[in-house]
Length: 366
Length: 110
Image (cartoon, rainbow over all chains, first blue to last red; front, top):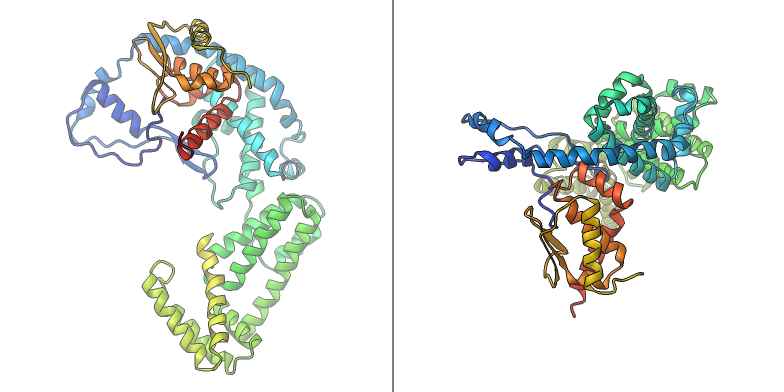
């Protein structure tokens, strides 16, 4: 009972192979891998045959028939388990969808699965059922369960997308489940919980106007704020707002704040940011320069305007500061000199430099 | 926690599971093992770590079914996981228990 290496990323083979060794090598490269926690999925491998070794494949694939028979016998047991799960476990989840995944349904799902433990339990249950489906399918036995299984899969996809830690979620299902869902469900419903909202005045007004779908709005706003910050990682205002949005999400998921409170907090942040953008545009500055200007002005640094422009020039010069330690060192030096030129208190300067980098480095940590 | 009475009771349990899972056992031993909880060969030889006798019977069942399933499913993929679940329910908790036990033994050597 020893665990082999679970996840092989690359395998270079430069020796002759045939029969079982060949089969094993291909199987290892092709071994699927899935890590729910890290959201990593490797559905299959990719084998390049430079020397025509695949000519020997037919021999290698001649399975021992006893092995195949044993699997066929066990399938009966798995069918019973699948049936039991669909009949006993699935109904409580299926009951959450009553209107064919309309906005209200999606909102209910997001609200219902706010709690992390509840989500975890559902994800575990679903993954077990999905595994069984992938093994059993195709089989006429599955026919009476297909609609419910497809609905259950879609519930999983909606909830998973809504609460995924990473912003870009692509593959939710295993292959056969994916085919079934495509056939049975309008897959656009799954995207509702993951819609990108352009963050501007019009969006804020539109969100405020409609009363319904508050949980969906909370989730979509948080994701939109995070995505905007990721795409504008040199704008400290957006980076800081994304961090506050994550705090709102934590509190929303832990039920420390209600859906209404979470939504109103997010809207408040967006309003504040709109005001900031207006002033910034009026001054003809970009996010970073304006951020530094505000910081320096708050700390009473003289000639804050000139210093903030010099800081901006530093960032423009050392564009790889996130990846290169050397550039980071040089940039910090340049930023420090820019502020020191206007401020004699060295402790204050160090504090200011630290706070600028702390905010911006948070963008690279997300 | 319900422990095994003795080696014989454990072996009887293995044979009981082997009957249910349709596995032909050629030799069966429960003996001290340094690095594994159990091992099996496709020829039908089964070895179990004697340390299991001092542990919860449910954990023993987990190791037994784990090994016996390898006679028909030689990996830890979807099929193996689903069969484990079909026979034992939430089997992962036993796996976690074993891992915790192993960590404790390493951390506090006798």
